Length: 251
Image 1 (cartoon, rainbow, N blue to C red):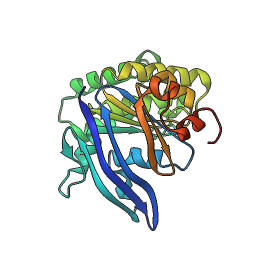
Image 2: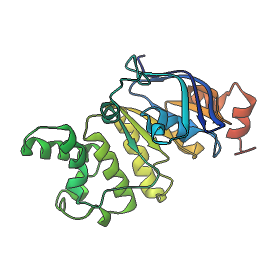
Image 3: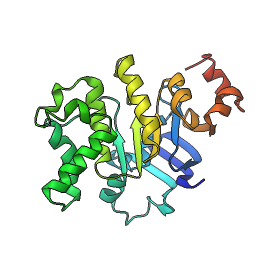
């Protein structure tokens, strides 16, 4: 198996508070990796390290290295814009832009691409199909994105991320604001999408991680406690803290 993301001795502070402590992990290409753990353990902070979103926080200080395709993304001369095109992100709550469905998907392409209009529209169609949204919206592409249901809006955000041909998609609790039916649809979609992209998925939903993830990382108090194949971590955890979390003794 090929590593897509390699994390080596990663530490992060917000001001004087250390939030991530000595993280080492290797995320496998075209697999779905879930990151679980109690609130405040550093899950989302770790996720945002993979596209350097924490750089936007002035008091953040980071040491260690992260390699994507064997290239260190924490060197000084990294092209942050290119990195974020390669590593897409979908957030906890659906956040479509106040534009049409079409313009939401076109947004990244206008920045990235010099393709002609027909090529860009073909790309929009492909991205919406990949996000299982095309059949729902093909006759109303010029309608406002806010007219879509919550689950459809989240799939639109996934389509928008896919439009720039990323290698990796980061998802920060993407179903926490959705109803059970929409959640199930997103879960099915993620299992399908890992054939096209590497997925790293932060979730507070332990059962969801068990259903969709190939690998699972358990974090606690800023440390990576355990990381491995999901079936092994859930059935025979090596660390007592992992077992305690999975059985509901804390969290």
